[in-house]
Length: 400
Ligand code: AMP
Ligand code: GLY
Image (cartoon, rainbow, N blue to C red; front, top):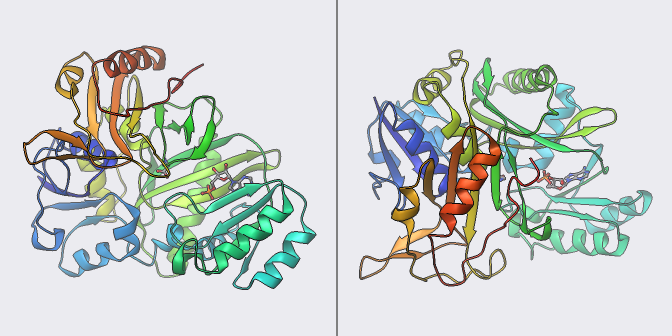
């Protein structure tokens, strides 16, 4: 079987690596760490299956374009991709589906937004409607900060057009957990659980990032039956709107005293969650995604062991990453037992040296029989890697 993976980060490297156990994989555009990377557009490639990794091409309708060419695609069309592409659309769908979520209101004008905020109690939650690369959500206890943020977002200065509409919602509290559902339109299966570490510094300090590391399995706390009910209701509501959702559904839940409520949906695997979920699979990922893409019931996955991934980032990440530094030690680290180094933001310079080319550079990923063993292996491997300004959290999967 031949599979094309679309994307270029650590998530796509993990997808290509695990799909590569049972299939021939090409990745576009890929990166220097992913074997068989090509600059040929997915529209111009032929394969038995196309797997689209990131949200931006999905929201832009790449799955529709490829399906119109007769290709088999794992990834929702632009219609279903609105689950991540528009919070207003997503919240309305949840309400219509009867899936619990925080009470909310949409706003396009600053006056009514401010008036509504003044009726709420802290903390205040202000969200950009459209895609914002993980930076569109403000949580604050300060009313003036919330009002200023709402105005800033609505002005179009913060996030361009995707900010011209916002959602203000009720604050929930409780532990956060996520789930990954491989959906085949009507049926779905759940992948192993994972937890990421979103903030840039140890002890969950500093600004939010795309994720500084992750581990799998996540600590207990997720009731599978409740998650299945949420996914089933969501897929049924999508169907009612004429949307046949074939792709990943990545849900963020808050376990409130009133039961689990959906905070957000993503239409893709998490990054770096994919890097720890996929390597643990003992069943055939390619076969599972082919079934889902064809609208059939995907095979129930099996998994074993544990996995930890630590993100090595550039100086200045997330605000202003300084890239272009030479990276050494990747091969030595990758030769250690249980270690795979996924490339997230790397390039080759004129002398064919590996250099940093993004805020998140490498994902040092270790499998082991326990999370503790995997964690020890990942941190031992990091000692072999060097690039200027390299930084990482030292507490990924700590205390597990
Ligand atoms: P989101 O991208 O919508 O998941 O929001 C990012 C983060 O903001 C979440 O992981 C939560 O920690 C926090 N958050 C979002 N919505 C709420 C809410 N309604 N109540 C409390 N915290 C929230
Ligand atoms: N790591 C969180 C995400 O991919 O959205």
